[in-house]
Image (cartoon, rainbow, N blue to C red; front, side, top):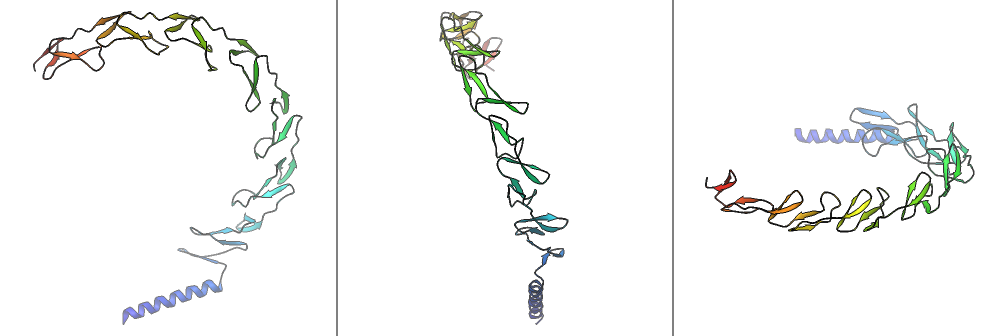
Amino acid sequence: MRKMQQVHATSIGVLVCLTLMAAAPGLVFSQGGTVELPENARAKSYGSGWECDQGFRKVNGGCAAVMIPANAYPTYAPYGNGWKCGRGYRELNETCVAVELPANAYPTNSPYGNGWRCGRGYRKVKGACRSIRVPANAYLNFPGDSWKCNRGYRAADETCVAIKVPANGYLTDSSHGSGWACDHGYRAIDGTCAAIKVPVNGYLVDSSYRTGWKCDRGYRVAKEACVAVKVAENAHLNASGRDWECNSPYRKKHGECALP
């Protein structure tokens, strides 16, 4: 009997709540109680509280209509002033004023900066667009506000000078360094490409630094030569091939392999 009374009381509570919601559509119900909705507002679809309808924004606890000035468009964003200036205009004191374009410039859609950008072949200098002087053996670089030297040339001040490639060398596409590299078997020394001297029992490696060669397996570097690795008794060459290690169960001790 008590259980039926509890169910009956719960049902009455739900009906009362629904009645209140129907009678007072301007109320938001939350865990902490009810909050009255201002005009042109609605309850948030998630969480608690309320938000302004589209075309309105929060002002002093209420929802005021977004006043869009001339040459602007609505953003319908819940933050900011609710509008942005159109292309060719910039915001100034809640209005949109025309962007003053210097010669050889065009308007941008970016809300940042001065609202314009210099055309290809021009560079911004003190609020104006100055023509870019492209030196001989160079070309305009993307997006057109700088220049780059042609292949085989490098920048020197405001000009492009030819890269002098030494014998046994070749041009590279890198814009850094000397602009050239040595052929296989040669390495750069004082602006030239010197032949790499590979010792007996050695071989060339594709490396532009250090010696440019390595020793064969079973040999190790000794200054400018490759000397044979002396493998101790009961030992074998290790994985590198430049040293040895003891066979199991022997252990290295004083340059020999001894039983533990």
